[in-house]
Length: 411
Picture 1 (cartoon, rainbow, N blue to C red):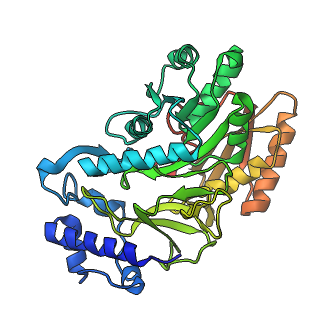
Picture 2 (cartoon, rainbow, N blue to C red):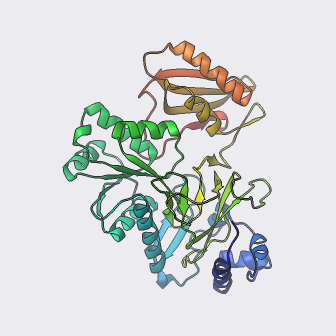
Picture 3 (cartoon, helix red, strand yellow):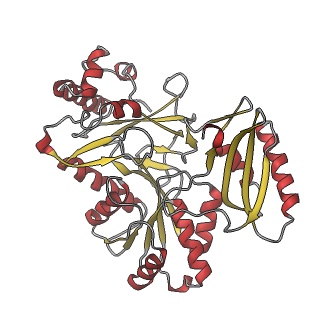
């Protein structure tokens, strides 16, 4: 998939706006000798941008419009380093709502639905994005935000929520609470729109099994509007990305070379019409691939596969490069294990040690299960971890995103 003529014109317009604004980003492009693009080759020669560039522009150095045209700011949810501040114009806010409403429509959600929104509100883009799309579509928004599970379940029952919007971690927590309290018959949920963190098939299966609902992956990041820039449809053959607002590339994270459709690499996004803070070739660090061919739904929007992880979440242990997804794939091969796990890495007596905590039901021998898991992990990554098996529910559940990797070597 290569950039088309209309998208090239839009990118050229954005570059000229950035340079004219003489903002942080415009100066970067000028310093790189860029003044526009006319061909696909011109585009692929443009420099990448990444999060540190955006941090360097703190607080409002990314803005491409006068202050009086900024109607809202959002900030990334990261907890370390200088935050990233993204300004939005009135059109940006409206465009985001339109994209999000399209996501709901692709999931078969209509004005008759009651959308239970649990992601956080505030500087983070999540809750307000889910709500804006809901209101643009014309559905009933139930803006709960995270936490207070008792209140969540009460409102879910009393108001007859039909759609749950949540992180996968909180969706699992709510599902397990519904099961534990025996109130499934009082819950009217039919669909779940889940985003903001990678989640494996085992977790999907557990949420689906307990709640009996259709699950939809929604994609997005604060720097590029927020959640709502893509979603899978009922055929579940990848997430459609709205290429009338964004240009999508997959690159080799090591070389920066653009990869052909079907090959796994890092997602790079360019905003085509964003006014407040346009981004050119922004490296997301999310790992996926563009799926070739057409979706059975008939949509021509390009599709990406599930997010397999991040190019920057690699752990180096005993000289071996390890990704959390590799451990997750091993754990998924054991039907006796739940979807939840934790990885702890420490440095003891001059060597690195990996400890993996996993959950299982009480029907198996914990010591034998730990041995089997350790052996299979060793065959996958080349060294043997210490494995601790605990009962289902022992590992913490989260109302936001679950932290599963703890690297204690640098504490």
